[in-house]
Image (cartoon, rainbow, N blue to C red):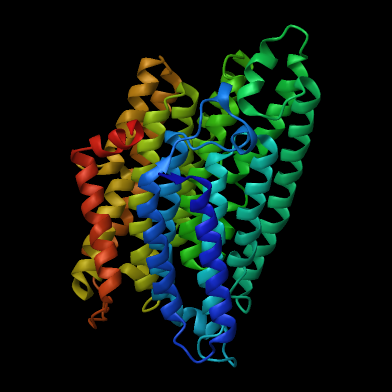
Amino acid sequence: MIAAPLLEIAVLVLGMLILLIEAFAGQIDKRVLAFAAIIGLAIVLLASFFVARSPSLPYATGLWNFYTADRLAIFFKQFALVTTIFVLIMVIDYAPVLRSSFAGSTSQAGLGEFVALPLFTCAGLMYLVSAIDFVFIFVSLELVTVSFYVLISFTRRNPLTLEAGMKYLVLSALSTAFLVYGIAWIFGATGQTNLYRLVPALANPATDAGAALLGMVFVLVALGFKIAAVPFQIWVPDVYQGAPTPVTAYLSVGSKASGFVVLIRVLQPFMNLPQTQRLIFVIALLTLIYGNLAALPQTNLKRLLAYSSIAHAGYLLIGVVCFDVRAIVFYLVAYLLMTLLSFAVLIIVAQRTGEEISDFDGLAKRSPFLAFAMLIGMVSLAGLPFTAGFLGKFYIFYAAVSQRQIALIVAGVITVGCGFYYYLKVVRAMYWQSVDKTDAIPVNGLSRVAISALIVATICLGVYPQPIFEALKR
């Protein structure tokens, strides 16, 4: 069996090797580095199935006081690795855009760094889902956030990219301040930073529950920024639109998933407090309504997916209100598949036409494969039956029905109807709108395989979801 921390160490070493090769092997085709990173991550992913579990809390010492390798952590380490592999495949497709943004330099300037940074982000995400101590959560979160600072503003000659990077920097720094302040309040009230030891500390009559609850609210503000929950979502549309498209996909999937895992762990000691449940309920309701209504008038596909990301955070927060971890995990997996599928097609098409929904007019004639892939992505995001998105919403609503969350169910059903409208606008453009251009859009072999795998997984999990639930039991 393999010790769990070796997985993150392997990813970090891989990232440093990529940087060293990039620096000293100037004559090689830098796309080889992306292939090497993909192969390396695939090996780490395979190794993750042979990880030794962490000891239970009463027997935990040393490292295991702030790091866990429970089922949830191992599953989401694999989630982070899979996400990063697909993002690196998108980076290969995105290489021509990077070359144009570094015009005047060598033809592949910056590509090596753009491959290495997602590896460091992946290591941060893997640490984050294993963190069970506020101090370690803070350190892991900063590793992820600093990597995203650079990735978002990487194509620095694009004004939209610089604007996105600055907004993310300022608001992320603000959210970090809230996180540290909240941790200080919780530690001051309980004397603990370990999440599992907070439970008996909060049950102690001598503990100032009000001060601990205030600290939890500050921490929730910081995590609300990471998961794009209302009213902490203001950065999402501009950052998603301005960032390089593979980075937008990574932000949308990887950052959100790890944020929800941390949210589940952080809220667990506080969920017995009625104030906590009411606060999450209000945030979930506002996020659902705002995300879906704001997506309705969008004409730019990246901005539409940005508001869609906010809406899906609302559905996931319904699962948090009900504290149904299985429903949340399945929804995150479904969201991974359908979002990466949509962004993979967007990267290829946008280089030929653009990112507006109107740029997808007649795509079914120019590239039936890409049009079908985007069709599956859109209908799954909308929640059409026999797709992973449908079952994800089904499990979330089933949890809400079990907990008698009537208001959330009503809001959720109404907003699903809104989703059908704005997602099917893209389908209408591809299949019903005419276009003068008839030249085909080429798709390389690796991207075709990756997109095909996402299509198959989206449909298969929409019919047979058991593999995800079985993975959580191992």
